[in-house]
Amino acid sequence: MEYLHHLTVLCSSCLKGHIVLSNYVSADLICPVCQFRYPITNRILDMIPSSPSPKKIIQSLMESKYLVQVYDSLFWRHSPFTMALLQITSEREFGTFYHALTFSRQQRVILDIACGTGIYTRKLAQKMTASTVFGLDISMHMLNYASAKIQENGLANVNLIRCDAKTLPFNEEYFDGVICSGALHLFSDPQQVLMQIHRVLKVRGRFVFATFYKPSGFFFNYLARFSTKFLGLTPFGIETLKRLLKNSNFTDMKIHHKKGLWIIASVMKT
Ligand SMILES: C[S@@+](CC[C@H](N)C(=O)[O-])C[C@H]1O[C@@H](n2cnc3c(N)ncnc32)[C@H](O)[C@@H]1O
Ligand SMILES: [Zn+2]
Image (cartoon, rainbow, N blue to C red; front, side):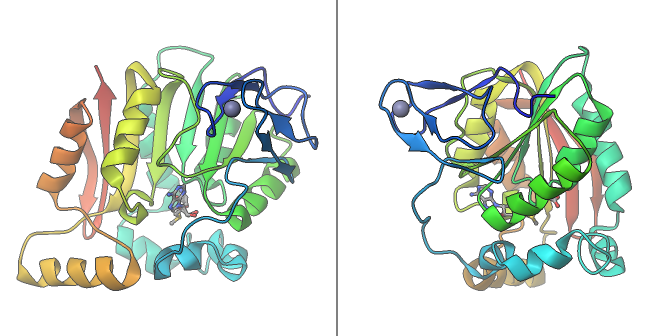
């Protein structure tokens, strides 16, 4: 079966050309308007061919090939430590995401932003075989791992793209649902990412996310400042989160999980 469906991405160089994704596995893709060439490596469309800007500690870790080896395992994403920190297992978290998406149609197009090793991209693709799932991340190491797993599992309905969440290479109202697990706190400009998500989401579509949450109080304020400055990880106070979502024109916020330092919530585009 064809790996990539008859879908298009928007050229991030000229923001005008629509690049058709079908019929490629290894050849570069070229924008029909500005002729910019996007390489494909290991079935990943690379929309950041030049080197991205310098990273803080946590993001450098995310882009390290050593972390990727253990990320999807009992030593990290499925470890008792991670579960204790987030106070939810990844299976239950995925169930929460899936239910919160509340789809009403059979064939959908879904975006997993900052998909990492594709832990939820793969689960979505497995559950929704008639749909297409896009997994997007800035880290090539993460995406390489995701790509290997996708091929191992024989999933033909996933498209992987390397790009920055700040500039989503898609038309307005392209997706029926968008998810983002464990990455909002890593973005340098979460407001811009949220506005982009709002732009590419269809009306009445939901955006579901999980992120680090900052309880109120002096200790947590101090910890958050330290974490932002030195690690590049910014947990959100609930009021900040509400404000960012409202400024991006999202409505109908639902909180599905809020325990310890982790929050899972969803919003709608109206
Ligand atoms: C903790 S991992 C989460 C991966 C996956 N969603 C999960 O739940 O396991 C965070 C991911 O965010 C990605 N990321 C960070 N900043 C990004 C950006 N600006 N654009 C796209 N991806 C980004 C990292 O490369 C990393 O793979
Ligand atoms: Zn172009």
